[in-house]
Length: 70
Figure 1 (cartoon, rainbow, N blue to C red):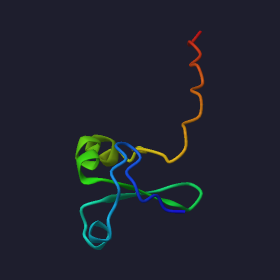
Figure 2 (figure 1 turned 90 degrees about the horizontal axis):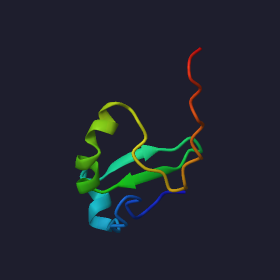
Figure 3 (figure 1 turned 120 degrees about the horizontal axis):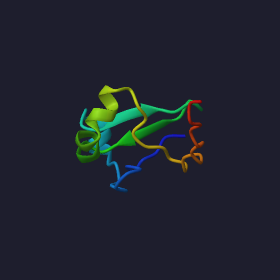
């Protein structure tokens, strides 16, 4: 399943957008593709360059508390 709205700002992706290279894609572990609009792509560029997930179509899992070193 592919998202057709930006998961960060809910901007819809139009057919003209799909034909261009302005939207960035993120490939999810389940094989789906999440599309991120140009504005959010620029805002999250540091995460993209660090190869971190930018957004997910589903809610993130609850964080696991870090254990302090002994």
